[in-house]
Amino acid sequence: MKKFLLVLFTLLLAGILTACSGDEGASETENPAAEEPATEEEEAGADEADEETESGEGKGGFLWKVESGDTEMYLQGTIHLGTDDFYPLDPAIEEAFDSADVVLPEFNLLEEMPAQEEVLEYAMLEEGTTLEDELSDETYEELASIFEENGLDLETMNEFQPWFVEMMLLEFTTMSSDVDSQEAVDLYFLEKATEDEKEIVSLESAEEQFEVLSGYSMETQVQTLELAIDGYEEAPEEMEELAEAWLEGDIEAMETMSDDYGEAGINAEYMEELNDNRNIDMANSLDDILQEGSGQVYFVFVGTAHFTVEPSIITELEDKGYEVEHVY
Image 1 (cartoon, rainbow, N blue to C red):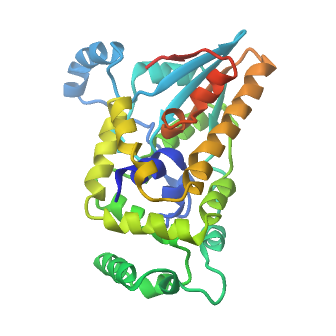
Image 2: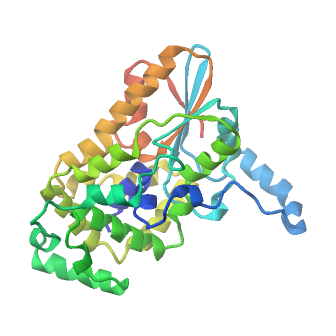
Image 3: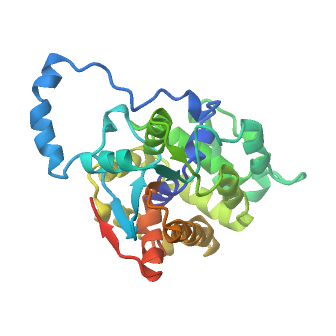
């Protein structure tokens, strides 16, 4: 799978991996914020670990801050994957979250995830059209082979749009990698926010994200599915590299992974809808909050690409006259 496709789906769409995984709901996810009692050996190394993390070299990164009067807003780029040893994150991130009165995710995965039946409604092809009709014989055969490797028959997917089949490939990739959508950073923050009884205000809705994917032209959907099939074998390793780059806060690596989307032969509508328009809308929403001057502290957590792929939320806020500080 081309790296930029992995970057986009794991750093731009909060609920897609969770919704397409077949799980009944993110609310059943084990709380990644909960910690097992420390062993004596772990306690003995705690001081050394604290020294390392206090320097700003802990887990995670991609934290910015913007102020308007006495209102503070932290902007945290996330990854929609993880492992149980991701947490806790760097103290700078944890402290910013703890200070917040209100948290703003893309949407609340714990309460707003559509039922599987609703997701399938977005995913179905028009009556009289099949997946096999839309794909070339070669592409269909390659896809059928991948499904067979995973114990499934592609014929059972013949009524579904290419974007949904692509999400299943992404789920196959996740299952064969060392990362897990049920340990996603978004879920970690949402679990903590719920436990701390913080106010949660969604910037988008699950329906809006599914409308983006199902709203693409058939040509664009086929293009991205073909790219996913082409890079399928390398995808698990690339997904793990992406997770490691996120843990290290490596902005340059993130940008390198996604900088080839413009040369991939995908229609312009793809990035316009998946990234550009959404970033503009979210930046406008954040601008409205900052202008309200409530004096509260806000903690925004959305996929990292929303802050690193232009037009980004950060560049949009800067264009509005805000000074955005890169904290960590």
